[in-house]
Image (cartoon, rainbow, N blue to C red; front, side, top):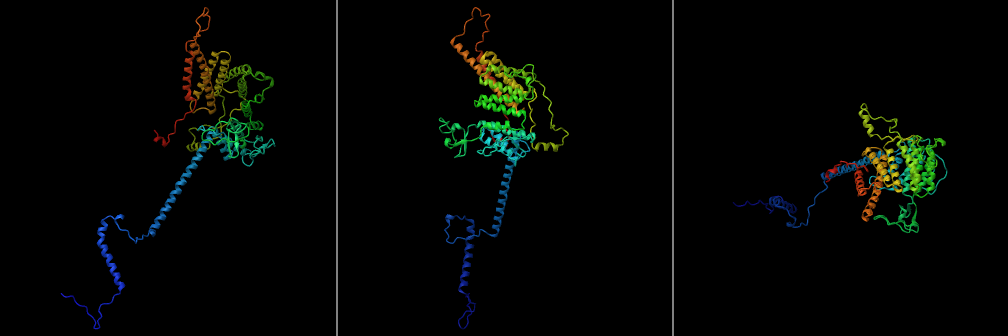
Length: 562
């Protein structure tokens, strides 16, 4: 069939409407894209689109990344991230705050301070005590003294904790950070706890200052160090510095780092308001420091001051001791605790100075007096009763979480003590002193016998206290006594065993003579060597009680350890 022809006008124009050239090209492009898409869509969707197989396009396709939907999602994610970040950091900060106050509570229980002091004063004193006896063993004497000095400055400041103190002197030292640091005060208006804490802080400062005596401050680096490391004319042979430490200071850059310990001891003795026991303790510690510095005359004067303080309530014609030899009379009755401590310190000073003839009678009289003390504990009033079964549960919980009470005051020392574990350890130390003197002067067998008895008594008392029980000071005293006794015993027996071995090697042992029947008993062969082995076994056996070994805490990290 033939294609129909278009109708035309007589003038030669077509009957269909005309179309523009632009519209024609647009329709062709749309048609071409649709055909291309329909032709390539099945194959393209089923084949991977690999970049290295596709030809590069000069007209990259533009993509809208920040649409309204995507921007809303981004805002949500940012808010969520900020919320989690602030939550985690807040939890971490709260955990650190809780950990800090838990540590402060533990330090308060270990080193109690008066509750009426401000927080910073109590913290300075607690930190100072912790730095001088840390569990890690890294003692920091300089930092400890700095903390305690800050506490004492706050206690002397009338705007902080020193309200109501009356100065007893107008002498100041402008070279110090606080010119009134060593001005004595009248503290009688303060409470007993305040005065006891003040005395404890000053004694801590004085004892710590003994360990930093002679230290220097390098002003160019603001660093303190012992004087033995200083390089200068006054120290021609300086000690090499430890590995990893800063270089040694130069003498031209150094000044004295800390005041002398004498100034704190003098301030304690000049302060009005301390008890008799506190003044005696300060005088004896000061005398020991003077003896260490080689000032024997000053030490004797301080011992005499302490003795006068201990016997000021006793008639001068009825003193329980001899005023020249300081030997206690057998019929003078039980002496007070203060008098026993003062006479023991005087006897120790005589023994260290080499006055054996004066020290031995004093030791024997003190041992007799201590053995005559009562074995019964005196009844003490209990300020706080133990919680009974009738106490409500909530009250018990409150007792656990509230701050611990400040310890009650110790005995004033004006009454005779009873034979507690501490006093029996004092007896053991006297026996060890007597044994050492007898071994060096007269009979070695008698000296060994006294030393053995002292070691047995000290070990018995230390084992009776048990691990983790008893007063810390009592256990420290018994351990020092036991350690000194074992060391003396081992030294004595080692010397005798060495002499015995030399005698056997030289063949100097004599054969029995005509009058051997009346002679002394023959010592068994290897007696002292066998006793030396016994002493070594004794030392090994007592290691478990020479220190408190606590079991490790059961933390979660312990589960992952071998």
